[in-house]
Image 1 (tube, rainbow, N blue to C red):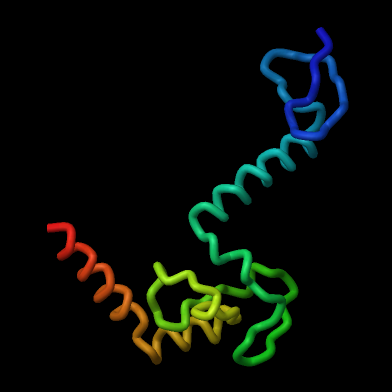
Image 2: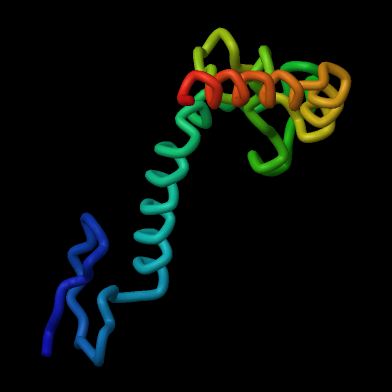
Length: 117
């Protein structure tokens, strides 16, 4: 039986065997990557503001996974562009520790919980 690949914009046909939905492993991976990107944007909309260099020390990464998007005020619910900066993992860790950002986050979360009661 001839089937069409389920990946968006793929025009390949293939001989369907059992539950096969994609024409190749590459198409299956690309479809999976696209789903994961959509999920990441829903959970972390600020990720699109990640720059290519650490704004604190100037570190240029080999891979973008070496950079984080940091919330300047420590409140991870405040995703205003003016509240975001790109930091390397080391600068992010150091900033969070020295500013005690987890206390800001906990204070913000506690205030929200009190409002709900």
